[in-house]
Length: 73
Ligand SMILES: [Zn+2]
Image 1 (cartoon, rainbow, N blue to C red):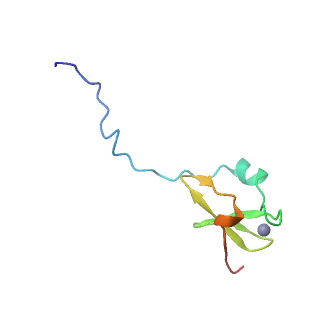
Image 2 (spheres, protein in one colour):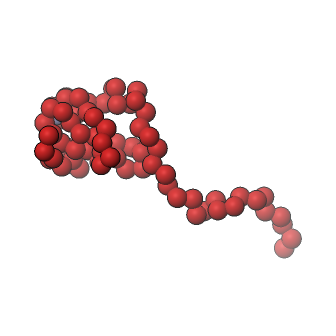
């Protein structure tokens, strides 16, 4: 039992850091409910058309009307 393990400090304790959303992704995404433009907010992607806010989980926008919530414009 003398196997040396390559040093990978904190490999398992890395925190998930939210990645900034790719602007090109924003470009091709649109609201599934009304096909309106989306604007990136701290809480998620906000539709300018119908005011739904889509959550972003682990850097991936959840483009489901089911998961979206209505917010004031
Ligand atoms: Zn919309």
